[in-house]
Image (cartoon, rainbow over all chains, first blue to last red; front, side, top):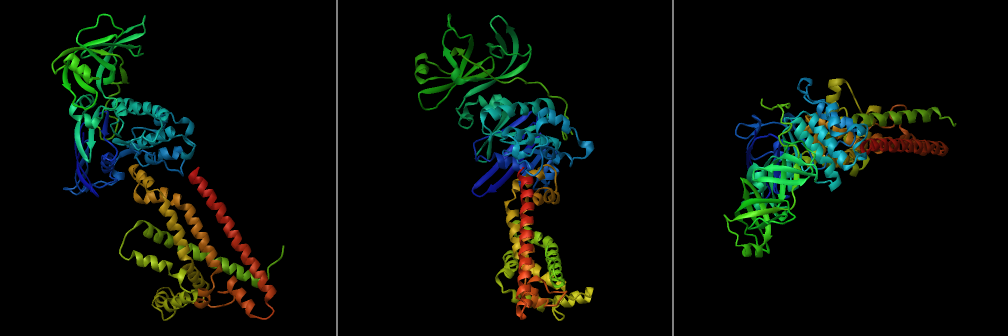
Length: 374
Length: 230
């Protein structure tokens, strides 16, 4: 359980934030640059002192202005992965990794260097210095260093923001492995929706120093009122599904979700695996009748629930199919021609499905980290 | 290899001893002052900064005279030192080391303060989140990262101490074997008729020692920098 209720004045900027959520999996703090995300986790880490309020992680109070509690950063046991890595330049990778570990009493070490080196693929660079590492390697070492301090919670401040796309793709799977194999709770700051959808379970929407919403990623991305904050870019909905079967003749996989079945190019996962899909609004077309001869495999009966009020030639519609919500982006002209209203039954023709997470429901083992359940 | 005369050997050894002691004793104080000036805000900071830099702008003779006033038999600090430890600094080589240390102090503090200001405080914050207490952070992060600046500051102070003349001769006088360092021996030779060739020899010795110190610091600082930057 993560509880934050703090107030802080930074010049003209005021942070007045309230967060209370479970710390299972990854909690993402999402917001534009300058929204106050980094200040929030700096307050969590003890690097920035709130003017007033209370911060607690899994029942341990880290800060409470009314009770006069303000734990020093070194006593909070929160691992922090910074955007710029912040590796110690005068130490080898090995010394960097051991910096936090040797300050943890042996009896409290749930995770050791061999495990971390294997998990993050750091074998080849232990003897090197940070200056000789690539950007991706640096962030992996920073991850390992924070992990080896055996924290009760891992904080990540835009750990991928300073990397180019290939390096991002290199580091992302490692973050997923931390989440799935170590079951360590993570607070992940980002302004990138694709990253959050891929990684996070819970999302905290931060805007202008305030928390606008806290909830499951699937719920928040499908809410029309939050669209100004979540953004129209890559607008789409996140849907839980599971592998229902494979069609080997055509190389297709059938996925079952609340609204029906989707056929997608082959996914090599066993039947029954839970996963998370993203259906982008621009990949969904609407028809009033089921087209009889069409190249589109996925025709899902749905009902129009909401119609966006955006200006411009295109409009986003929120659809519901068997309880699952997703979006369609059509032209305003089509909206008028088809006479679509909230409540109209339509057929959603889905051209493509992006698979964001293969690993839902895996790895949620018993707590192996300090503070879990304690 | 040309051999040194006993007088030259004596002056050289004395100079080295005075300069080494001057640097060794002022190093911890310099570090503390550099840290205060770079990292802390307190009442009297401007005053401290001014005091530290005073020897840079005052005539050395004035500094030597002030030391005499403070540390002389009748001076407040001199009386205290004598009654507590039976120590009297004027006209001793320790007094020469003190005079040299005071004169070299601003150079040392400036170099250390500059290097401390370039240490990335975000690295120190990172070390705190990894469980290190402030003292441990200073020892494992701050100090190693500012090491090149400490070396530069120490070498500057060493060179300044070797060459110190005005404050030393005022406070510690010109006593053969006790306070007659290289520059003072050189001055004495120039003052006496027929001392030109001996003075030239001392000049060469001074140049060689200073160059050696500079070269040594260059090598050391480069090695430390490679350690930091990989």
